[in-house]
Length: 161
Ligand SMILES: CC(C)(COP(=O)(O)OP(=O)(O)OC[C@H]1O[C@@H](n2cnc3c(N)ncnc32)[C@H](O)[C@@H]1OP(=O)(O)O)[C@@H](O)C(=O)NCCC(=O)NCCS
Image (tube, rainbow, N blue to C red; front, side, top):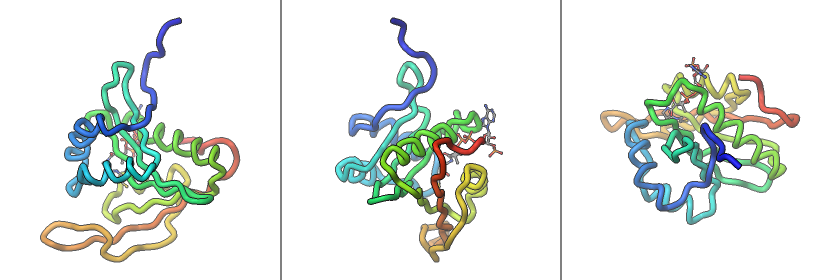
């Protein structure tokens, strides 16, 4: 039987963190530390990689499962692979997992200035439901607000992108 070609998903492991951190540092002005990922894996959060057939890292998501909800903590696509639908694939995979876990809602926070991510989430069906004042560090010692977004999981399909 031939092996599948094209991108696929697999769980993130501690041994992946060197490559994950290389992407994280490219993708964000205020990246997570290695410790954030280590703690997330130790806590049993749902951390998925999107990889090429040769295991090249495309992107990842980290989500914390609650009783009937999921909280998306990190969604990142390596800069060279952005604009190719990989974030939408990561959201679709998360939505399937959330539905399988009988979650009704997926929550996330996003920087108010992150127009690209906000547009992606809105098109995907997230709605902005609140604001956390000064939630993120920003340049020159300032803070930036987070918008709290909620995706209410409906039927069995993810929204059309
Ligand atoms: C925000 C982020 C996750 C989006 O990832 P992405 O893989 O580029 O997103 P997608 O390709 O799935 O969709 C985004 C865009 O690509 C377009 N697109 C989808 N498939 C495409 C394809 N085959 N060819 C060209 N464009 C495509 C989408 O229509 C969408 O259009 P837009 O550029 O007008 O928004 C990514 O930019 C990123 O990692 N940014 C840095 C980290 C970050 O801000 N994360 C979010 C924190 S809350």
